[in-house]
Image: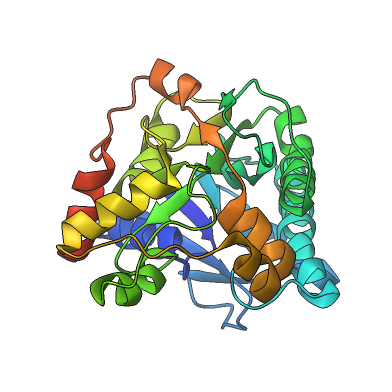
Length: 302
């Protein structure tokens, strides 16, 4: 098996690459850092200019496409929004156009997406068949998934993983939450009633591996744990794991004032997402319950 990975330096990509190489699976990174053509472990690409050597993409069994600008790194200025959009959509279009034209096409393409696709939906229970919502992230996710159409039309099994909030001690949102919670200054955000759909890093990688080898996995899969939780209960659970109180709220108006649309869509929106199709494929979660996942994160094992 040969596997090509984009976004291999990200949270999920790094963990996936480490796991695959540890099992002796040949893993090649698609990177935007210039590299020697003789380096068999890296291939250079530059989506803004359409730069990608198609010949070097021949013969991979699976492509895992995880690349994208960090959405929580800095305010959503117009320039930042454009980088978020282009890093996902332009890169996916380039990659899928070339994969579709290859003589030796991959069998499977696994593309990251996000539950931002659903927008702010309150108490509504959302499955893979639910319609897209409103907002910037929903717009990005729709275009992101649509950009993979050429690969699917060429007969490649395409999977869109709509990822929830990935919990890990190694990166993502949780390390930013831990300091105030450890000081006893954590608590619910806004009214705390918004639903949070999450996934442990170990399960995020596990779902990618499951999708690589399970032909029942195709189309959209909600990559979330089967037990979403309201923000106030998330705060209470994290406080209990850390043996700290967690009752100091962060008012919604303060979030909007400080972070604008980014805070509104990332912290205050509600998405009660269920992994209906993923369950049908037979995936078994390592951490289906939030408390167990947070315990593992705090111990540094995830």
